[in-house]
Structure formats: C-alpha cells, structure tokens
Image (cartoon, rainbow, N blue to C red; front, top):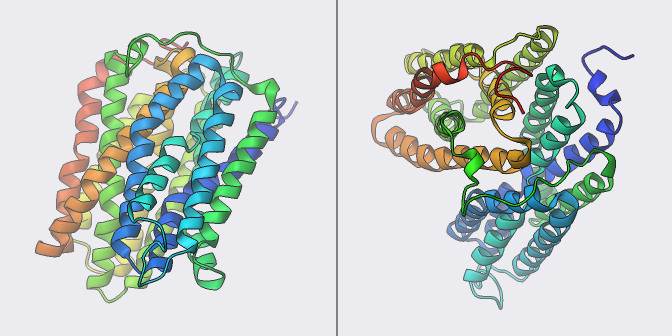
Length: 414
C-alpha cells in the first residue's frame, strides 16, 4: 500500500479525474484575463475589455451556484456536458467577434454589447471544475475521511499553480502569437479537461435528489455554513486588495516589475504550508481545522497592518511571504470545514457559494483599495486592507463555538 504524500493518486480512479481537472482548471484560470487581453488587444478598447471581464466574473459568481444545484440534483454527467458545450460555444463566438475587431471598429460588424453578452454567457456556463473535483475526492474517500485534508491540499496546490501559470500563458501567447490565442487555448483546455473528467465515471458522486428551496437549498441555511460564507467573503476582500496594495508599493519604490515576484514568493510559501498542514492533519485523526484557520486569519490581518510600515522591497519580500504564506492555512482548513458541515447532496453548490462569496469580496476590495492608494498612498492602502480583512478573524471568533469541535471525519461531517 502506498503511504507517501502523493499516495492519494493511487486511490482507484483518482489520478484520472484529478489530471483531467488540472487541465480544465488551468483553462478556467486563464479565461478572465484572456477575455480582457483578446478584446483590448484587437479592439484597442480597454474599457470594453474590462466590461467583458467584469461580465464574465459577475455571471460566474451569480449563476454558478444555480448550475451547481442542477449538478447536485441530476449528477455531473447529465448537466456538465450541456453547460460545458455552452461555454465552449460562447468562447468560440467571442473569439470570432474579437477576430473581426479593429481600433476603428471595436468589434467589427458586431455591436459592442455582443462582447459583454458573450462574456457573460461564458461566465454563466463555465464548469465549476474545483467543485466537481472536490466532490469526487469526497466521494472516493468516504470510507477514509481523515485523508480529505491531503486531497483538498492537492486541490489547492493545483489551483495555485493554475493561477500562477494562467496569466503567464495568456500574456505570452498574446504578445508572441495573436491576441486571441490565450482565449482559444483556455477554451480548449476547459473543454478537453472537462470531457476527460466526465469519462471517469467510476468516481462520479451519485445525484443528490431534489433541491429544497428556491435560490439557496435549505440544507445550506444554517449558522456554520453562513459563518464559512462570511469568512470566504472576508478572504475575497484580502485577495481583491492585496495585489493592488503590493503593486502600489512596488511602483512607489521604482520596482513595479517586482510586484509579481513578491506575490509569487508568497504563493510558494503558501503552497508549502498547505502541504505541511495536510500531512499533519492526515496523521492526526483528531485534528481540528478551526483553530488553525483562526490563527492564520489573525496573522494575515495583523500582517497587512504591519506591511503599511515596510521600509523597502527586500523587507516586503520577507513580510509578505509570511502574510501570504498563511493563505493556505485559511483556505484548506476552511475547505475541510465546508465538507464537514455540509450534506453530500449539496456539496457542489456549497463550494460554488463559497467561491461566489470570495468573488464578491474581490469585487468590493479591489476598487476600494485602488482608490485609497491613489488618493492617500500605498501605506494607507494596506491599512484599509487590514481593516477589511479584520472581518475574517472577527467572523471566526464569533462562530468559534460552532466550529471549534468540528473534526476531520468527526462531528458535523456527513
């Protein structure tokens, strides 16, 4: 029997669906930026590109949970082929519209609103790859739930890698090939990866039965899930503001090109921290995610405030590596808690609601921190970000009596 860190991939069927999900996840990570790049580069209109990207994000956050309800109700193989085909069609149509664009005629013979409509259609139908894959992990590990943290850490590692590589691929293809090449590759990766995922029929979770409630399933309307929703909203505030604040810091120190490496260094630390946490939690059957999540949340919030006094770029590298390195120690325990407090029949939609919460936080914090840094400077941007992120430990403290005794495979799991 395989017992190493990567032994999860030897679970029957796991390597097959996980590899397919990795491919599709990279495509999803590329899509938002690829829409911006394709529309802006071919039309010369940054405003139109931003509108397309915004429409994609809003549609994904608002429609995604409803698509997930259908997936939980009918199963992945009956719903995802329909939505996945719609996504590929919307993406292909958007590429065609951009292909006819020029600076004089932003979308060629097509009206400008067609870009926004097609981008929104793509966002509404983009497959929730992370939720589909996580649901399969929960299904195949049903008899050994203590290994779930390691599986979710593997998911987190794949997600982090995708969002590190995705923007690089989009910009490289956009500058070295053609502007729409990034979007074309994204659509192909999503379509191919999802097709591969759906052929792994042995690991598909069974349908969960009829939904209960209109927009939100009643099985999700309880205090523990509400607390985790609020916590992920707070993490979205952090995600939305931190890139803006670090970029403003780097530009103020004449080191704009180092904003990306600063973020990437923290991403590597976070990835390592997540794998260490998963290994420790797997060995300890009584591991409790909530204390780890709360401790990391406090470090992130205090760290954002401390970064406001960073004297130079080298210190920012070190300081943000510590702050950003704690991200996985919020996300992975949080993902374990979501699995523990939600019914299997509504797990896919639970994960998409969590993603929507994060997206909402990003949408709020990014412009707010951007305005603050532009008006008052990067230091005040970090202070505003710390204030926003304080919602995270505050939420966890208020919900701590509800979450502190939830254990991996213990009370609250289903």
